[in-house]
Length: 578
Image: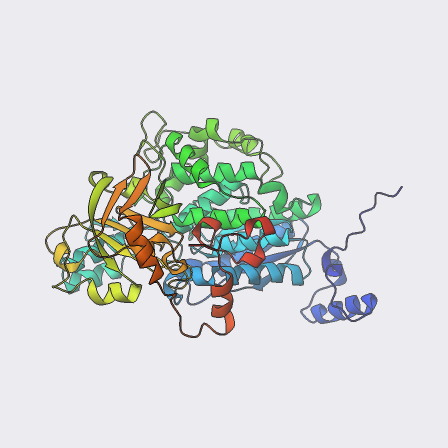
C-alpha cells in the first residue's frame, strides 16, 4: 500500500475553480511569474507572512523590518516567503472600539490563510486585538502557523522620570484631571509617553498576549519580550520564518499545539505576570475555536495557588524591556514549573519542558520574584460571583486598592457611556468617595463592542479632593495598562437583561474579593418590578452590514465575545438569557 502524501502543496493548494485543475495551476503560475518568480522558486514550500503594517498603527511601525527578517528565515530554511496584508487594528484608532473589530480581523485572517496557497504562515501582530484575532483565525484554518509579535516599545523620559505607555498615560491624565499638573506639563509628557514604535511597554494587553502566546506554544521560545527596535526582535523574526518551514514539513498544525493542557499553561502565566483582564476574554475565544471551554471557576482556583511574580506596571514598577533583560518569559516559567504541563508541544516540535531545560541559565535579577517572596500572594485576577454577576465578573486584584477589597457602598449609576461622559464631572453629581460607580450597557451588545470604559474616571470634584480610587463596576472591559478597584465583564451584560441593568441610584452593593462575592442588596420583588420595565437598547445603523452581524451573533465575555457561528456548536451558547 502506498504511503505517499498526495495532499496538494505549495502552488497546487486551493486552486481557483475553473473546472480544469491543470489550467488553474497554469494560470496561477503565469500571474505569479509576473512578479519575477522562477519555476525553481515556486517549487519550494510556500510560507505566507501576514503583514499588518498601517500608518494608523504605531505599534506595528517596525512591520517592514520584521517581514524582511522573517522572509530571510524562510529562505535560509529552503522555503519561499510570500507576504500578504490583512486588517490592522490599533487600540486608539478604532471606533467604537478595537474589540468590535477583533472578530472581523479573525475572519480576514482565517479566510486569507484558506484562500491563498501556503504550506505554513507567519502571523505578525502586536497591538492588543491583533494577536488574538490571528490566533483565532489560525485555530480555525488549522494550517501550520507561528505567531510573531512586533514587540514592546522602549521607555521615554519626562523630567528625569522613566515613562512609557500606557499606565503612565493614565497616571498623568489622572493628575491633570485633578489639577495637579498644568497644560504645559501634560503636553510635555504627551511627547514622551510613546517614544518610538512598538506595543505598550507595561503589562497591558499586548504584552500579556505576547507572554501567554509563548506559554501556549505558538511562538518561538524567547519571542515575547524583545523590544520592537532591537536586533533581538529581528533575530526572533528570522527564527520564526525558519520554524515555519520546519512546521510545514512536519505538518505541525495548531490543533497539536493549542490543547486544553496548553491553555492551562497560558492561564498560569496570565496569573503569574499580573496580566491584562482582556487576556481572559481572548484566551476564551481562541480556546473556543478549538472546542475548549475555559472554566472561570478552575481559573480562579488556579489563581489561589499561583502568585504574581513579575514586577511590571500596573501591578508593579518596571517595564517589558526590564523583563527582557531579566531573561524573558523563561525566567517566569522556571518559577511556575510545578504548575505547568511540561509535555505540551511548541512550534519547535519540542515540548515546553524541553525548551525550558535548554534555555540559557538563569541569573540574578530584580524583575521576577521567586515563589517564596511574590509581588502579590495570589494570581493577578479573581473571579467574582453573586446575584449581580450570576455567570461571573473579573477583578484585577493585583492592581486594586487593598483597602477596597471588602467594601459596601451606595450605587451611583450611569446607564451608558454617553451618560457617564455627560454627568461624571458635573459639580452637582451626588457622589462621595465611599460610593460605588456603576456603568450599564457597555458590554458586547450594549456599547456595542465592549469598550475599555470600565476604567471610569474618578468624578472631578472627588479627584480634586485627592481621591485616587473607588470601586467601579461594569459590563465593559479595562485596558491592561490601567489600575484600580474595578469589577469588569459582568455577565450577563445589562443589554441582555442581566442583573446589572436593574441597579438604580442608592442601591447598596457589597464587594468581597476574598470571598469572591459581589452582591446587590435589593429584594427579588423589587428586582422583578424593574425587570418588567426594561427595554432593549437600539443602536443606530444596526439594521445592516457588520454592525448587524455583530449584534446578532456576538457572544458574551464568558464565551470570548466571538461570533456564535465561528465556533464549534457546543461552544456557541454564550448568548445571555438574562
